[in-house]
Each structure stands twice: as C-alpha cells, then as structure tokens.
Length: 376
View (cartoon, rainbow, N blue to C red):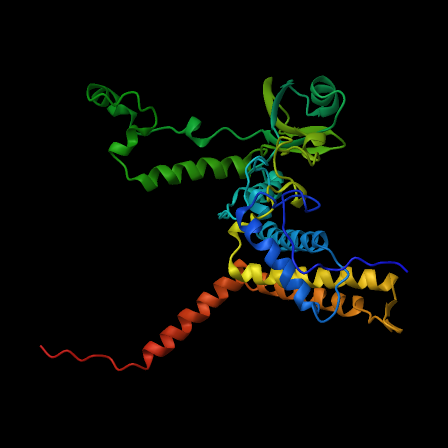
C-alpha cells in the first residue's frame, strides 16, 4: 500500500523553500508564510481530514498567488501608461511609481500626418537646385536630381521655389522728390517706405494689389507642373537662373523605424520596466486577495493529487475522494475577474467620470441649501 504524505500540522519556512525565491528575503513574507500555509490547510479541512500536501506545496502556492497579484496590477499599469512610456529607458523601475501622462508620443503620431503638408516630419528634408536655361521649360528631375543625389533610391518633390517677383521690387514711390529731406532725418535707407511719411497705409496696399493683379491678368503666371518626373515651368524663361527644390527620400519616409529609439527604451509591454511588487508593500486588500488565491491554488494541487489516488484506504474499507479541480478552476476564474473589474474601475477615464459625477451631485446638494441674506 502506497503511503501518501500528509500535512503534518505545522511548518517552518526557510529561505530557499519556494521554487523561485522571489520573496524569500522579504521580512513580511517570512512573517506571514507559515500562517498562510496553516490557514490554507485548515480551510481544506485539516485536522478533520488528512491533507495530502506538504509545506513546500503551500509555499509554492503562496509565491504564485503574490506573483499573480503583481502581474495583474502591472498589466493594468502598463495598459494605462504604455503610450507615455514608449521611448523611455528600460533601466528605471516603475513598480508602484506614479507615471504622469505626456504628449510626446501623441505628437510623434500627429507629426506623421503632418509630414505631407510640410508642417512636421520625423525624417529629413533636402534641398537641391537645377540650372534654368533661357527658352527651356522642361527639365528631367530624374537626371538632374535623383540620379545625381539619390542614385539608389527614389525622391518625392515637396516644394518648388518658383514664384513671381514680389510687388515690393516694383513699388515706385510718387513722392521721391522728398528724398533729400528724408536723408537729412536719417530715413534715406528706407527705399520704398518713404511714402508712409505722406500717405496712409492703405494707399501702399492698394498699389501692391494693383501690381499683383496686373501680373495675374496681363502676364503669364509663374507656375509649374510635374508630370512623369519632368518639371515644366511657366512662363518660358527669358534668362538663366537657379531654381531651388525641397525633396524627401521615400525610403526614409516609409521607414517605420525612422523615429526608433535606442535598444534600451520601452517599445511594448514586454519591456515596460515593471517588476514584481514587493510583498511588504502590498496593503491588506491585496493580501486578502492573495490569501484566497493561494487557497485556490492549493485546492487545485490537492485535486491533482487526489485525481491520481482516486480511492484512499481506511480501516476495513476505502473512501472515494471528490473532484476538487472543477470547483477550484471556477473559483480561480472568479477571483481573477473580480480583481480585473476592480482595476478597470480605477482607470483614468472612470476616475474622471466619478469625480465629475461627485462635483455634479455636490452642486445639486448645495442648490437645495437656502442662501444667506445679509442685511447691511
């Protein structure tokens, strides 16, 4: 007959008795662990019935229960803070630390949407120039820019600096006869602005507008078009000049790692720097959950053992053991769900909703209180 080891009725923990030793040096764990083992054994029916477990089984269950509580809390914190943690160093322990939300990663995401509008980008912009020849309108961007500057990649033209001359370059002041007088007052260097001494500002604006309308309606407009990687400029150039272009390299734009942080930074939940919560820092609410979860794990372990030894010999007979696994698994799932619901109720949106409802109810209550009337 096989002799099954049973709970002896007490235990004496020593560091090294747990499988991983996560909490073996925690003074609060050392103070509580034997009490947890004794409590679990009594909840399983000892000494009325024999418990086919040893102290090491209860120690392992307690260690796993604490680690599971820490895991659930850390999962919640990572979910809450991951967007703010991306790119931060992984060598900083954030366990049980307040993490203030920041806008940096959100701005990085928004910058990608603004890249094509030339407002922001996470990749470099480059500048190049081509020589415009008199009488030539069409220029190959592949030959003049891409093949010369980016022979192994592709470019995307973002801006062509081809504009009409500003109206101020052709602004003629009808009051230049006063130039000698203005020179004596030190205003001679203000080339077109001398008229502001004699005429209102709107007169200057009207003249600028007249020059611009004249260019638009009576002359060929300054413009360009890009078709099949060829640049066509308008009007037909009458003299040579340099035309400047701003462009990007598409391979850099489409590289998802262009904003990559160094290898020692947070990228996802797998390297978010949350470690096991020290047992001594867990409050009574968390410890009560840990006790219950340790009991469920001990019940599962006992169920596995009793599943192997389906019958136990007793004097002059045998007894059949009940199946503990199903009930223990259901209770374990309930405890996990209870903890997750508690954590979900503490998310930032839920807490803000709670504070908003509290403020609204306070205002309703205060509105029912009669206001004082002061008589002077």
